Image: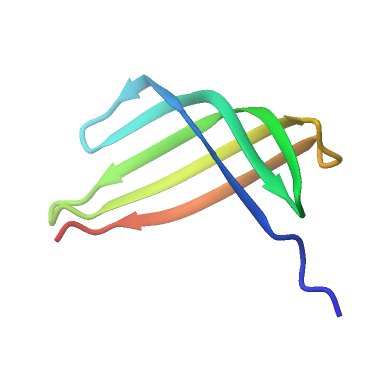
Length: 89
């Protein structure tokens, strides 16, 4: 029985603001990425977009679209959509 690949990765992302709204912001994301999958290392580049909206109570809703191009690895192209909430303490 297989449950999927164990992946660990990290990197540095530069976020350039493209548009600013009353309570939201649209950003372009770009940066290098590195990590390992099943004891095989990879290097790559990440690019995508991020939209964030801040509510009156300080909570923030974030949608992030990511595109990855990996080198030294069998899984060359990856993309995804992340949805999240940031809650202030």
